[in-house]
Structure formats: C-alpha cells, structure tokens
Image (cartoon, rainbow, N blue to C red):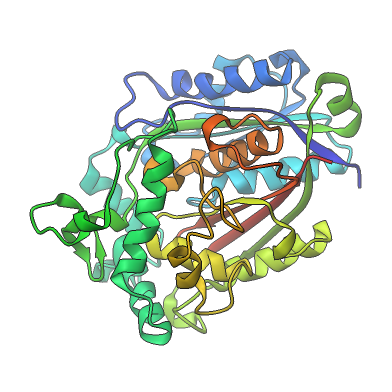
Length: 389
C-alpha cells in the first residue's frame, strides 16, 4: 500500500441559509482546496461526492456538481453514511490512492439543508433510524442522544453542568472561527436562566444549548499519492490511520447506551493502523452534534476512562492549552452541522493545525491529530489519524 497525503483543504462558511445552488456552494470549498494544493481540476483523477441525499432536491447531485467543477470525464463516486459521509469519502479516496488506482482524488462534502423546512429536516433525520420499529414512535435525533445522556448520567454521575461546560468551550472557539454559524459567547448562567433560549428544554436532559444547528456548507479535501504530494505540496499531511465500524441501527441491538461502540471500534482500528495510541494525539476534532456526544467521544477515543469524560471538561483539559485539545474550532456546536460537509470540515481543521496554519485556534506544535466523525446515532463510526511527518 502506498503512502497517501492530504495536499489541499477547503471549506465554505457554514451558514443558516445559502442563497445559491448546491453547485455554487460546492465550488466555494473546491476552489479553496485546489488553490491550497496548487493544482487545477485537470490534475484530479477522480472525485468522491458526499452528502445525505434526502435533503437535496437534485437527484444524483454528484453529476451536476462534477460538471460544474470541470471534473468530467474523470470518474465520480457518491458516498452516503449520514453525518459521517465525507469522512467515509476520505476513507474511500485513501483506498483508491493507496491501491494505485488513482493519484489525485477530490473529496467533496456538501449539504444545503435550507432547501427544506426545519420540521422536514427533523423528520428526515428521524428516518435515519429504522422506519419500521423506531422512527414512527418519535425518536428524532435529540431524543436518541437524550437517552444516551440519561444513561451516562445514571451510570457515571455526569451532570447538566458538565453538558453546559462543553457548549461553553465550543463557544469560546466559535467566536474566533470566521467559518462558524454561531459566533457568540455562551456562559453557564445561560443554561439556568429560564428567560434565555439556551435553557429551553428540547428532550430531557438536553436543552437548546446542548444541540448543534443545521447549516448549509461544503468542504473539500485533495488526496494524493506520495509522488504527487511531493510534487505539488510543501506541507503534505499524511494519512496514518483510517478506522471504521458500524452498529445496529436499532438501540435494542446495542450492548449499552452510555457509549458508542462503533466509535470505540473505529478508534481501535485507526490506532492500530497508525501505530499510535490516545496519548500520542496532540489535537482532535470530535463529532459534537450534542454536548453529550463530545463526552462520549472522549471515552470512546481513550482520552478518558469510562466515566472520566466529565473530569476532562471540568479540568479544562480539552481546551487549547490543555493536555488534549478538542474542537478548538468550535466544533459542530458552534460551526453548525451541514451533514455531508461536516467530516471534511473536521479534517480541514486538523490539517491546518498540523501545518501550523490555524491562526488564533492554533495548538502548540502538534505532530499527530485525530478526527472522530459519527453517522446517525452511532450507526457509523469513522476515526482518521493524520500526521505531519
């Protein structure tokens, strides 16, 4: 298997309502990525498009976007694994390049969620669960993660204050991320003030402040072979490990609710492939669609022992200056969550960190970074480990 690098990254601003078409939206991240890589569309051998198609009015969005971006007649592929679509796309691109089938592959994640109403969006998210046995009974995404939060609280003593602390951290960095939807400060007091929207109950124990927002956005990654990476890029970031796993779509098929098994198994596979462990990770991006999801990620990735996630956030160990900085771009809680673009955005953040180009969000001298991206309620787990050596 050949060495594989990421040589270019791009992302649009994540916004609540993008005024243009999906092809124009995709162009924003693509243009930044190819400029970053120092290439043109003609240098790209293949492209992988990643989204959750039920939000798009355009059937087969990859076709119209590939045409618009000048990627014909090169082969195009389409990947969907709910919220983890673009990290699944990265795994596919890695495999294509490592096998020698292609030399340069673009991974384009996108979602224009504002094309449908918020109520329609929630209904489609619910259909990510089993439409025969679960989603007809009202199990929307907040309700699923609320069950996980209740289970974690009951078993380990995690508190509402711990959940709020995750959002406070996210807002600390969201304020300095010019690509984020939510760029305002959040304080713990906002969660206890009945007059503040942040305190409004969504699905007990999750409040408005515990939930990320839908968004429109795109991301793009340019993946290349070692030969092409050294030809085009002065700062290639190497893909050291890619781990993936899946779990029963029905919660009755899971062995526990206070953790996500697919994330744990994906992490183990990625660590083994990369030859590293949790203590070797200098900076991480984790899938914080809800505040409890970030705490579950700490434990799934081995940053904390089971039940120890609350101690990391209480001690501010996951802040930029802490022992394991996590989501120092504001995470999904601040950036927003355009389903198909999310994983690529997470990877972009880690690439910039490893290149020392993250600006005010920069962690000191990171060598190895990790991306944890979940599809659905733990149905799909993807963990990617990147290094600058």
